[in-house]
Amino acid sequence: MLKGIPRILSPELLKVLCEMGHGDRILIADGNFPCESMGKNSIVIRCDGHGIPELLEAVLTLMPLDHVTDKPVKLMRVSPGEDVDTPIWNTYFDLLDKYDRRGRSTAELTERYEFYEHSRGCYAIIATGESALYANIMLQKGVVV
Image (cartoon, rainbow, N blue to C red; front, top):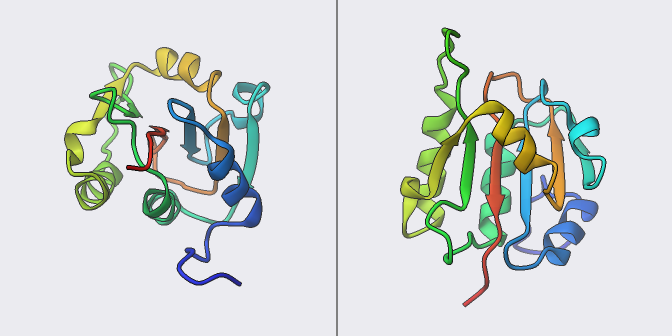
Protein backbone atom coordinates (compact mmCIF):
# COMPACT_ATOMS: atom_id res chain seq x y z
CA MET A 1 0.00 0.00 0.00
CA LEU A 2 1.04 3.55 -0.71
CA LYS A 3 -0.23 6.68 0.97
CA GLY A 4 -2.03 9.27 -1.09
CA ILE A 5 -2.76 6.99 -4.04
CA PRO A 6 -6.47 6.43 -4.74
CA ARG A 7 -7.24 2.78 -4.03
CA ILE A 8 -9.22 2.39 -7.25
CA LEU A 9 -5.99 2.75 -9.28
CA SER A 10 -4.44 -0.67 -9.84
CA PRO A 11 -0.67 -1.13 -10.08
CA GLU A 12 -1.08 -1.69 -13.84
CA LEU A 13 -2.95 1.60 -14.26
CA LEU A 14 -0.44 3.49 -12.10
CA LYS A 15 2.37 2.15 -14.27
CA VAL A 16 0.61 3.29 -17.44
CA LEU A 17 -0.05 6.77 -16.04
CA CYS A 18 3.63 7.01 -15.13
CA GLU A 19 4.79 5.80 -18.56
CA MET A 20 2.61 8.24 -20.47
CA GLY A 21 4.34 11.34 -21.74
CA HIS A 22 3.22 14.85 -22.58
CA GLY A 23 0.59 14.73 -25.32
CA ASP A 24 -0.27 11.05 -24.84
CA ARG A 25 -3.98 10.29 -24.51
CA ILE A 26 -5.87 7.89 -22.28
CA LEU A 27 -9.51 6.91 -22.78
CA ILE A 28 -11.79 5.92 -19.92
CA ALA A 29 -14.45 3.94 -21.76
CA ASP A 30 -17.97 2.96 -20.84
CA GLY A 31 -19.20 -0.63 -20.93
CA ASN A 32 -20.48 -0.31 -24.50
CA PHE A 33 -17.25 0.99 -26.04
CA PRO A 34 -15.36 -1.48 -28.31
CA CYS A 35 -12.18 -1.32 -26.22
CA GLU A 36 -10.39 -4.32 -27.66
CA SER A 37 -10.96 -3.51 -31.33
CA MET A 38 -10.20 0.22 -30.93
CA GLY A 39 -7.31 -0.53 -28.61
CA LYS A 40 -5.34 -2.91 -30.83
CA ASN A 41 -2.37 -0.53 -30.72
CA SER A 42 -3.00 0.57 -27.14
CA ILE A 43 -2.69 -0.87 -23.67
CA VAL A 44 -6.16 -2.00 -22.61
CA ILE A 45 -6.69 -2.07 -18.85
CA ARG A 46 -9.76 -3.86 -17.49
CA CYS A 47 -11.56 -2.09 -14.66
CA ASP A 48 -14.85 -3.95 -14.93
CA GLY A 49 -17.18 -3.28 -12.05
CA HIS A 50 -16.02 0.32 -11.70
CA GLY A 51 -17.77 3.44 -12.92
CA ILE A 52 -16.09 6.21 -14.85
CA PRO A 53 -16.55 9.09 -12.37
CA GLU A 54 -14.54 7.33 -9.64
CA LEU A 55 -11.76 6.41 -12.05
CA LEU A 56 -11.76 9.86 -13.64
CA GLU A 57 -11.36 11.55 -10.27
CA ALA A 58 -8.55 9.19 -9.30
CA VAL A 59 -6.72 9.80 -12.60
CA LEU A 60 -7.15 13.57 -12.35
CA THR A 61 -5.61 13.58 -8.86
CA LEU A 62 -2.36 12.32 -10.40
CA MET A 63 -2.29 13.33 -14.07
CA PRO A 64 -2.20 16.92 -15.29
CA LEU A 65 -4.19 17.84 -18.39
CA ASP A 66 -2.28 19.24 -21.37
CA HIS A 67 -1.99 23.03 -21.17
CA VAL A 68 -0.59 23.35 -24.70
CA THR A 69 -3.97 22.55 -26.22
CA ASP A 70 -7.18 24.36 -25.30
CA LYS A 71 -9.26 21.17 -25.39
CA PRO A 72 -7.35 18.26 -23.80
CA VAL A 73 -10.61 16.47 -22.95
CA LYS A 74 -12.88 14.82 -25.52
CA LEU A 75 -16.41 13.53 -25.00
CA MET A 76 -18.30 11.51 -27.58
CA ARG A 77 -21.15 13.64 -28.95
CA VAL A 78 -24.61 12.06 -29.00
CA SER A 79 -25.34 10.94 -32.55
CA PRO A 80 -27.95 12.96 -34.46
CA GLY A 81 -31.43 11.54 -34.13
CA GLU A 82 -30.76 9.81 -30.81
CA ASP A 83 -32.73 10.95 -27.80
CA VAL A 84 -30.14 10.31 -25.07
CA ASP A 85 -29.57 12.34 -21.92
CA THR A 86 -25.99 12.63 -20.66
CA PRO A 87 -26.22 13.65 -16.98
CA ILE A 88 -22.86 11.97 -16.32
CA TRP A 89 -21.20 14.83 -18.23
CA ASN A 90 -22.20 17.19 -15.40
CA THR A 91 -20.20 15.01 -13.01
CA TYR A 92 -17.23 15.17 -15.39
CA PHE A 93 -17.52 18.95 -15.64
CA ASP A 94 -17.55 19.23 -11.84
CA LEU A 95 -14.39 17.11 -11.66
CA LEU A 96 -12.69 19.16 -14.37
CA ASP A 97 -13.59 22.32 -12.42
CA LYS A 98 -12.03 20.76 -9.32
CA TYR A 99 -8.78 19.49 -10.85
CA ASP A 100 -7.89 21.96 -13.62
CA ARG A 101 -7.93 25.74 -13.35
CA ARG A 102 -9.53 25.95 -16.81
CA GLY A 103 -12.33 23.66 -15.65
CA ARG A 104 -15.06 22.50 -17.99
CA SER A 105 -13.76 24.66 -20.82
CA THR A 106 -11.11 21.97 -21.38
CA ALA A 107 -13.75 19.61 -22.79
CA GLU A 108 -15.04 19.38 -26.34
CA LEU A 109 -17.71 17.25 -27.94
CA THR A 110 -16.42 15.05 -30.75
CA GLU A 111 -18.50 13.27 -33.38
CA ARG A 112 -18.72 9.51 -32.76
CA TYR A 113 -16.58 8.25 -35.65
CA GLU A 114 -14.01 11.00 -35.16
CA PHE A 115 -13.87 9.97 -31.50
CA TYR A 116 -13.23 6.39 -32.61
CA GLU A 117 -10.34 7.58 -34.80
CA HIS A 118 -8.80 9.48 -31.88
CA SER A 119 -9.22 6.42 -29.65
CA ARG A 120 -7.11 4.31 -32.01
CA GLY A 121 -4.17 6.57 -31.18
CA CYS A 122 -4.56 6.44 -27.40
CA TYR A 123 -1.66 5.22 -25.32
CA ALA A 124 -4.14 3.32 -23.15
CA ILE A 125 -7.84 2.54 -22.88
CA ILE A 126 -9.47 1.79 -19.55
CA ALA A 127 -12.43 -0.57 -19.99
CA THR A 128 -15.02 0.05 -17.27
CA GLY A 129 -18.40 -1.30 -16.37
CA GLU A 130 -19.98 2.14 -16.70
CA SER A 131 -23.58 1.77 -17.90
CA ALA A 132 -24.30 5.43 -18.73
CA LEU A 133 -24.58 6.05 -22.47
CA TYR A 134 -22.05 8.32 -24.17
CA ALA A 135 -19.93 8.27 -21.01
CA ASN A 136 -16.55 7.84 -22.75
CA ILE A 137 -13.98 10.48 -21.87
CA MET A 138 -10.52 10.96 -23.38
CA LEU A 139 -7.76 12.88 -21.59
CA GLN A 140 -4.55 14.29 -23.03
CA LYS A 141 -1.67 14.32 -20.56
CA GLY A 142 0.21 17.49 -19.79
CA VAL A 143 3.35 18.23 -17.83
CA VAL A 144 3.88 18.59 -14.10
CA VAL A 145 4.90 22.15 -13.32
